[in-house]
Image (tube, rainbow, N blue to C red; front, side):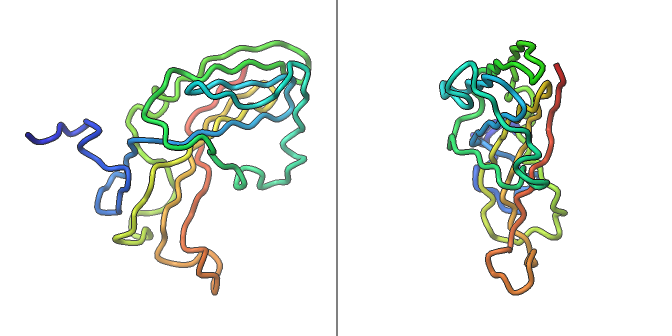
Length: 176
């Protein structure tokens, strides 16, 4: 029996450019807090963020202008999709916030978000499942996707380890 067009069996977790559009069956997850107090994120039964209700997170600016490029999603190989992420925090003015962020709804089409044109993606190389990163920055929650996309050319000439892009792509944002 053939897989239905939108069923998980109809696409692999190790896409190649021939599997266009690129979809994912699992994802990794990470969370980062900036300019918050007691910021905690619970996703797929795993806590991220502050260890105490009074822990103050630094401003994003303290990490440099390209702070998002250093993110990783260290909670690996999660099946799509656990219940929504539960986020609790106080913004830098001390106001308490609580939100549920439904990662499954944000990525309901299961498309891998990236900024690499199809013709620039290297043929025959696996494109693995992406990382999803939730950022809490004062009163705003942003959700990004980072996917390692192999490219035909080097980002840095002469550096053989620069044959990919892994840029964070904003998928969702809300200010509270």
